[in-house]
Length: 274
Figure 1 (cartoon, rainbow, N blue to C red):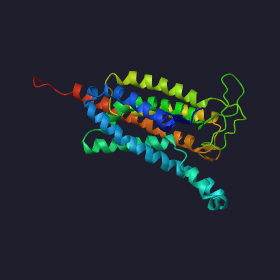
Figure 2 (tube, rainbow, N blue to C red):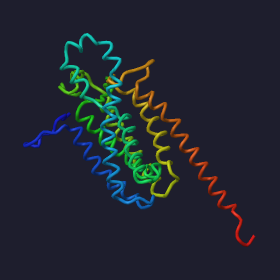
Figure 3 (spheres, helix red, strand yellow):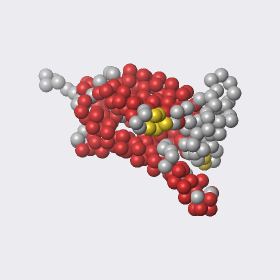
Figure 4 (spheres, one colour):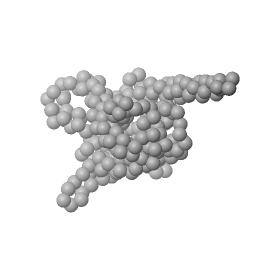
């Protein structure tokens, strides 16, 4: 585990560095789909920058919201230990918050350009799991988002980590970060393969909002950290997963039916000779 990478003249958090690497790899890949969906490559770069800002902001906002139950329960402690409160507030992000922020960033860019956000998302959504896969590698290096206690094949033991206070290095854990990373790499390959043939607007987003939430819902049972909070025995991320799946189904069914109707209308148009 290497939460900090030392380059000699500068130290950088491994998570942020790996995420940056993910964007560097993902953006050129997304650009290969741009012309197929009538976008310029520069549009992909600029919209991704805006989406990255939204991702960071909303990932932090949702993270802070998820902390509210803990802040209420331990109000007396945190009110007298402001340093612990500061560390808690600024030491985490929630992926789903980042996803929402990124989608809003892409939507804002599309609005500025008077273009279809769903068409733009057909280009960028396939590489979202690719960036996320890099991010989970960063989680593994940093020791966060760790798995349940586990003593079987592939078990890992994290050393004491000042950045994740409750990982004491005395328990073998399931490498859930690496499993999620591998699944996200596979999801990227699937979505990119589908997107190479021009699809109706919103299809790739619909597929992603069905496949990844199902993946995430079950992976949550392998998570050993409880930092996201739980409601009725279900984590915040699982609740969000359950809410996203119907949206994905709606995008596939509604948009798919709409395209079918348009094609049928075109096929049934009378010719000038009739």
